[in-house]
Amino acid sequence: MRLMKMFGLAALAAVATMAFVGATSASAELNTTLCKKHTALSCAEGDQGSKIHSVLKTGTVLQLLALVDILCLGVLVEATALGLSKLLPVHVLTLIFEGCGTGSVHNNCTVTVQELPLADLLKTGLDQAKLILLSGRTRLQCPSIGTDCVYDLAGMEFDAGANHVTANEVVISELGGKFFCPDEGLLDGLLEGLTTDGFEKLYILQ
Image 1 (cartoon, rainbow, N blue to C red):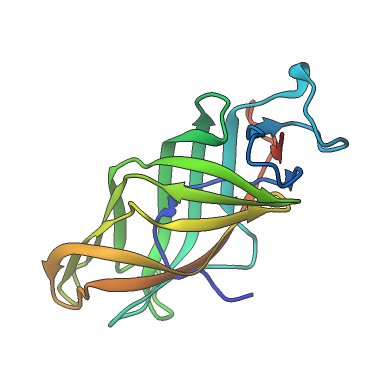
Image 2 (image 1 turned 180 degrees about the vertical axis):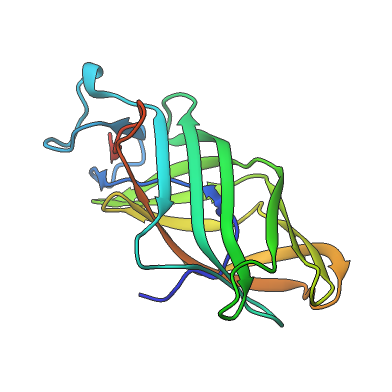
């Protein structure tokens, strides 16, 4: 699998975010539910969950491919689901990027979140879903090369399944900046969900 071309879950972007398994029929009438177990097609009421904690998968990096490629060694996304519907609203509460830089240098750039993303989670099939960002904004600064770019996360789509969220050459739009700030970049990366500090690994059921 390719490395992740950067931000948004980042990103989630991100973040982001968020590790899920979709287990469902193809019926458009079914709701999207986050569940602590995935031993059945539907989720028992006591097993439903909403708190999401995802990090960059061990051994991978987040990567933004643009005029100057940027790598991040760490990504943290914490989010919560806001209800039950065909499109499950997701609110990113925390989005952090660490160890970012150009090439083999991982300390000469910073990525800050100017607006935390809102997203929708939509089942697309068995063990499959789409995480669609509706908003969000990040800022990339690399003082050593004069880069200062702002990126719009709205419209980015990530694949969810097998307790992971994947970005595979997801287009990210640049809103304005200076020096090596193209109109678009490509984001690659792989986030995995963890059980920690009250957060659960959550799966996508009907």
